[in-house]
Image 1 (cartoon, rainbow, N blue to C red):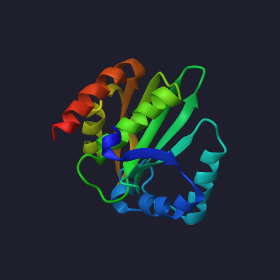
Image 2 (image 1 turned 90 degrees about the vertical axis):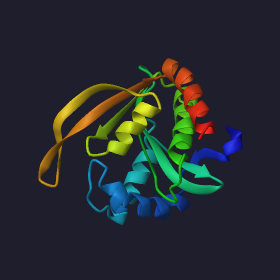
Image 3 (image 1 turned 135 degrees about the horizontal axis):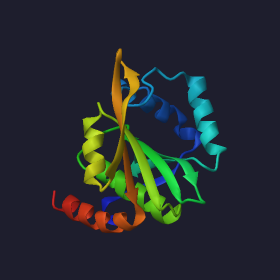
Image 4 (image 1 turned 30 degrees about the vertical axis):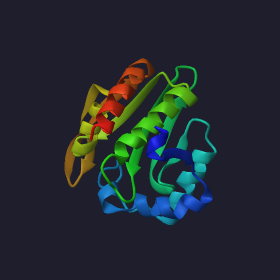
Length: 181
């Protein structure tokens, strides 16, 4: 994977403005649980709460030494070895960045954080993310019907999970497919 010149790094205060810009892009906001424009003070509070809570982490995904996106790990439970994740490519999207983000993120989550089961919640309107989760080996565990109100219509939320033992197999298949692109 070192050939791809991509990695995760901790978020710093210097990243706040960039992440704020990404979070407020309409194409990103419309696929989040809340699609409201995020005010600067709320953004700073979000960042501070993540940094002060051992159950949450955020990393910047770097490619060619340029910030390209973020991955957030929430509800880290060391007793049960479980967590949830969310992510997005924020800048300069090009083919394969999502796969690289997933590769580094899932390796970090399963190996460094010692997570056994990683969960994800995906809005039904986010077809790209639904396909992406299946592609990187997540299995659907459930469906929350009519869970979120968006544009005066209730939409479903898909519940996905990936287990560490499955990731060890899935990452090999994923990278074989990536290198053949």
